[in-house]
Image 1 (cartoon, helix red, strand yellow):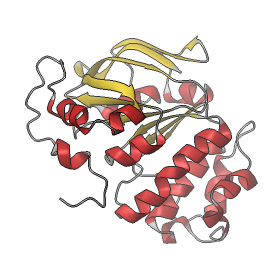
Image 2 (cartoon, one colour):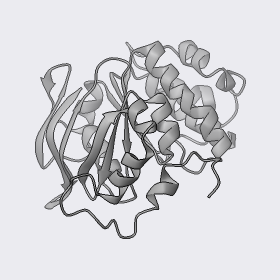
Image 3 (tube, helix red, strand yellow):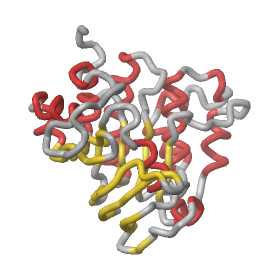
Image 4 (cartoon, helix red, strand yellow):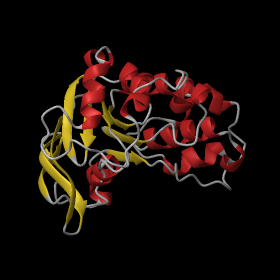
Length: 255
C-alpha cells in the first residue's frame, strides 16, 4: 500500500495533510499523536469511508483514490474500528464465520492465532472480556483476507496489563499472515515495540517519521514531535492535547 501527499478531512475541512506512506507485506506502521491530530480520520480515508481531499492511494499498484468503502474492502483494505463493531448477541464463532471470505484466513487458522477465542467459541461476543473482544475484532478482520489491516486504538477501554498482552499479537498477525498493518495507538512505546516504522501527527501535520526502534530509543525526539517543535510550522502549541511525556510512557510507568 502506498499513499502520496494525502490530504484527509470532512467536506471542505482538511484535518490532515501531506501524508506519505509506503508499506510492504508484514510491515507495521504506528500512527501516533495527541487527540484530534487526524489519526482516525486518516484510517477512515484509507478504508474508503471518507474521500481524500487530495493526493493518491494505491493498493498493489492500483490507484484506489476514488474508491468507496466497498471498493477498498474488495481491494483488501479492512478496518478494525475502536468500537470493535461486534455482533454482541452472536457467538464468537458466529462472528468470525459470518465475516469469512474466500481467500481469507480460515476460521480454524484465526483460532490458532488466538487460542483463547477457541475456548470461548460458543460464548456470546457481548459476554467476552474487553481483551477477548479485541481479539475477536481482529480475527473477524483476518478472515476477510486483508492485504492492509487498519487498527484504530486497540487499547481503547482496556487495562494496561491487557494492552501489554495484546500488542505482541499485532506483530504475530503481521509475521504469520503477511498482512501490512497501520496501527493507531495511544500507548506509544508499546506500539513502537511491535512496529517497523512510525509517524507522529500533530494538528494534521506529519511532525516526525522514522524507524520505530530508533524513535523508541529517542524519547526527546518523540516529546519534541508531540510538542510540534521538530520543524512543522504552525504547530508549536498543541493546546488541549495530552501531555507528550505522559503519552510516551509505557502504561505501567509512574506518572
